[in-house]
Amino acid sequence: GESVGLHLPTLSVQEGDNSIINCAYSNSASDYFIWYKQESGKGPQFIIDIRSNMDKRQGQRVTVLLNKTVKHLSLQIAATQPGDSAVYFCAEMGFPGNQFYFGTGTSLTVIP
Amino acid sequence: ETGVTQTPRHLVMGMTNKKSLKCEQHLGHNAMYWYKQSAKKPLELMFVYNFKEQTENNSVPSRFSPECPNSSHLFLHLHTLQPEDSALYLCASSQGEWYGYTFGSGTRLTVV
Image (cartoon, rainbow over all chains, first blue to last red; front, side, top):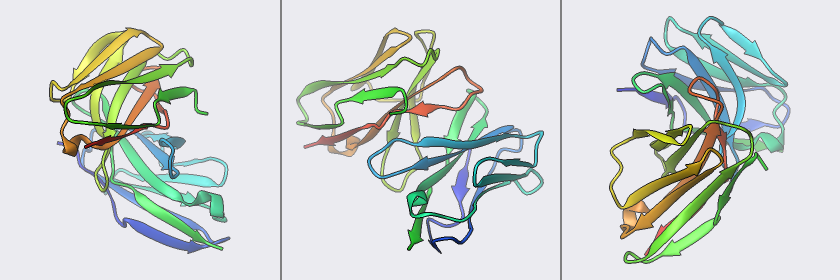
């Protein structure tokens, strides 16, 4: 079955520093990945996605990197702000069923 | 607001009660989903509806009964639940299988 996991359950960074959140996936056939952010009391919110024909995709202050060789996904947040404090999930579109498989999440805390 | 609205936000129910969770989206999406989110565990897909037809039931106990009367509304009927069913229940919608999901804020369910 699918296995999606993050390397660290918690991460603390100083405000203004860059954050890197990692995710490993198990299905080499997966070709669509999404990062979600979940703040306390809210549902997961879409941040950025990437398809397997790309290695890197940039958004506003966020970059997703995909390494298909080692089945690794990362989310980089530039100049981390207190509002970035949340739990971050990676999700992999896998088979069968064409459904998303989610990791357990990394809790990011930004220290002012 | 994400465009996906869930009610109620919080629900406490006894093991013999019957209650329903409601989800509504006006994003024009054709697919709707129920997920269960428990502490320290990945999001668990429960049910998938595409164009009002159920296309996925991930071995969910029969005490959970979904209903999708139209593409904009999704219900989860609850009956004779167990304390281990206490969790955050998230509804999501998407344009289709290969698109990211928009989540609601969830219903925090406590079974006593």
